[in-house]
Amino acid sequence: LQQHWGYHSFRPWQADAMQAVLEGRDSVVVLPTGGGKSLCYQIPALSRYDKTGALTVVISPLVALMVDQVAGLKRQGISCCAAVNGLLSMPERTDVLDQVRLGDIGILIISPEQLRNPTVRRVLAQREIGAWILDEAHCLSKWGHDFRPDYRYVSRFIKERAGQETVPPTMCLTATAKPDVIADIVGHFHDKLGVELTVFD
Image (cartoon, rainbow, N blue to C red; front, top):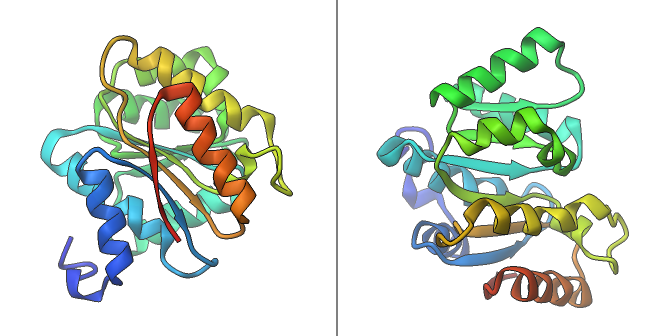
C-alpha cells in the first residue's frame, strides 16, 4: 500500500479515520468532493483483504461513482475491486459475483437495492464481511436533499447478516451533509445497530 500512496501523504484526519475503521470503530467522514474520502475506506479495505481475505462492501447510489471507484483503483494496479450495477450484462454480472464468491474480490461496490437481490445475498453470505461503507451517506437521511429510502434498509440488512455476531465496522462518507443530516445518520445507526459513529468533519 505504501508503494501506491505512501502513508506520509495522508492528511492527519484521513489517518485517524482509517485507524478508526481498522480498529473496528464506526465513523462518519465529511469532506468536500475531491478531498480524499475514498482513501479512508480503500486503504483499510485493501489492508484487511490482504491480511484476512475479508470483503468490504461499499453502498453507492450512482453507477458513475461505482465505475469511477473501480477505474481509479485499477489505474493504481489494484484489481480486487468490482462493482455490480445495471450496466453489466448477465454474463458480466455472473462473472463478478463468482469472483466475489471465490474470494478474488476485496472491495465490492453495489447499490442499496442490490441487498434485496437473492443472488447477491447468497454470495455475501459466503464471505466474511470486514466493513460496511455507505458512500454519499446523506442519501440515508430524510433531511438530506437526495434521500433514498433503500439506504435505510442497509442497517437492517447489516443487523440480520450479523445475527448474534459482532457487527463489522461501518463508515459513512458524505460531502454535503449539514449538521441535522449528520445527526440523523448518527441517530439512525445508534437506534438500528446500537453503534456510536465518530464524526470526522
